[in-house]
Amino acid sequence: MYKLHVESSIKFRFAHTVVSCKIANPANISQEATFSAVLPDTAFISGFLMEIDDHVYHAYVREKEAARQEYSRAVSEGRTAAHVALR
Image 1 (cartoon, rainbow, N blue to C red):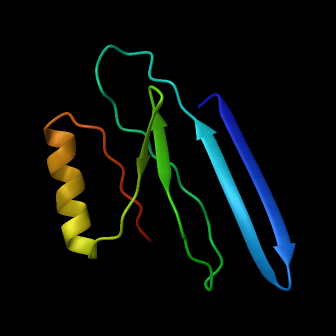
Image 2 (image 1 turned 180 degrees about the horizontal axis):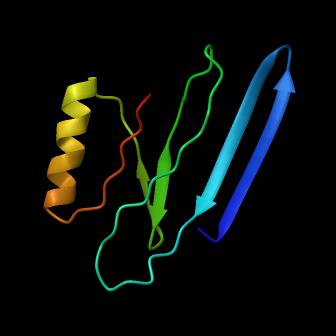
């Protein structure tokens, strides 16, 4: 990771936070990167996107197990993939 930027605005007890992170992969093969964030119990993620080589990938919501399987399948096929989950 070579850049992490957090911007947050609060209005009427509602916080809107944007987290931007740039990660470089110096290897010649695909690698998995993990990013963790602690959210308040009442918070939620309303959007997620990745920009890779000037192409923007927008996230979509799936049922938990279906999302995990789709992510695993994409990774095993060498495709670009992301998975957002609660721990």
